Image (cartoon, rainbow, N blue to C red; front, side):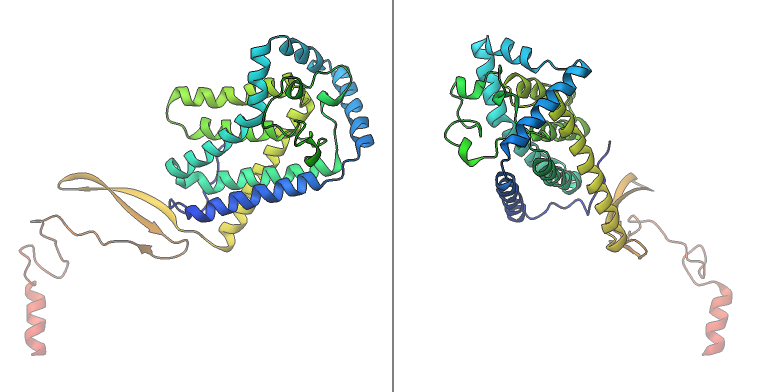
Length: 305
């Protein structure tokens, strides 16, 4: 899928962007952690999810969790991947888009915002206990004393432990991977963008933090966020037509060259007026080929005198 352009190629104001992202994440965290716990509903929903996955033949979370926990260096790496790397990668992709692909930045950023805010609906109406809180699973973040996770003992009481559906680890990693896949120029970068969401899926299941259905919910939420961003962008274009960059090529005596200009929808072309190359004689319809007025034009001027 391609992200629609929103606005012009100019970058938004940097400090305004930092304020917007900071306030947005603060509001998201505040609302997420303010959702009532409802532990009884969350565990009932978890049993329902496990039963549905068993009926579908995809209930692999317990086996993956125990297998990964048996390899200490692997599970510790996945714990830190789950705890901190997903935030670092998301911020890194935002900065990369802002610096290198300003023409796409606004649309992609609004897709991320819409996805994150839509996830709050799932957190409120579908509280879900993660696998690590279910009998038989290993809470690897706590067992291996991982720093920085909301599941660790020092911050668990401050965070909503039942905000598992949809998985924003999957939603944000898919957002990052698709952005890199679409806009990166180097093949190895696009390959990393493709592999990153898959690595995130393995990490969230191995650490016992999400079910496979949580991951499907995160992907669906991203799709809804993109659809919402696309809809709002279309409405903004109708109400407030933006200046769209246009690039044209003109052929002159000194060869082809690009001429950039912008055009307002329904308006007149703006931009510098092209001047003919030096030494080029412009033919005027009221003048002869030598640049002088034609005989008919000179006769008319004498009669007026």
